[in-house]
Length: 96
Image 1 (cartoon, rainbow, N blue to C red):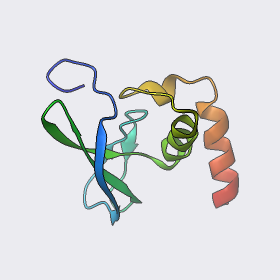
Image 2: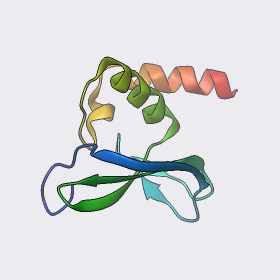
Image 3: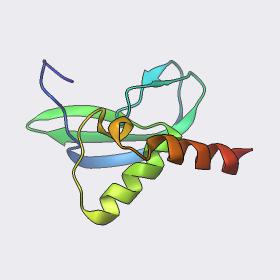
């Protein structure tokens, strides 16, 4: 949420892979992404605002599915999906 308003994914200007230097909140589920995590950092613009979108591994997976379907989602929406926990278990199996 920015300035008290729900924030949606805007136009992505660029994305790059980074290793975080501090804790961040995931844009998709709002859970903490710990310092030292490797992730994609997207710089987005919407209504003249520039902001970063950082997703945890589970939300990155879910966001790809949403984009393939052309669905729009807002900050925190991905954690509210009934299959978020299932996706998390799948990701944990892959990483085990």
